[in-house]
Image (cartoon, rainbow, N blue to C red; front, side, top):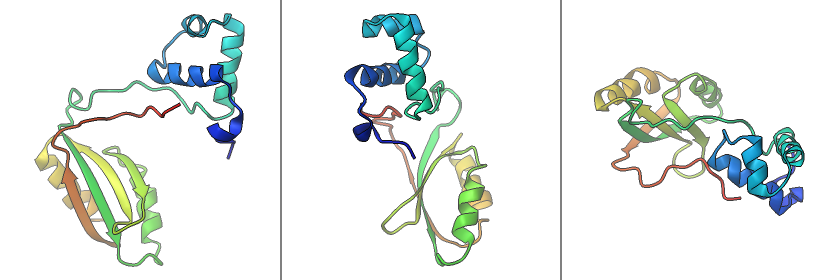
Length: 159
């Protein structure tokens, strides 16, 4: 693994690049250079270095969950009874292929995993729990909380 931001020795220009591309991943190099008060070549080189060093993993469009038809956002806690079995590893592998799962975290505390899952509506979410999650071996507990209102959602890191 590469150096973290704190260990990297990135200067303020590098940090500005990271902030700007988080705000607008489609920003042209000309606009980026202008915002940085640099010429285009140094701006482009710095951006490519940040990509090569793994600070920038990729670019994507942020889609509207609701406009895409996913009215339900569930926050789900999963627990396993036997951690020594291969069930958690099989769970982690299977979860990678399920598009409704936006994120999956192995966590400390009462639960073993914390998931963010989207579904078009409550009926669809209920089917997902019954047909997908309950069918996975080793799971002893599934606890769902449904988001009533999204107060903040961001993938932007503080730079």
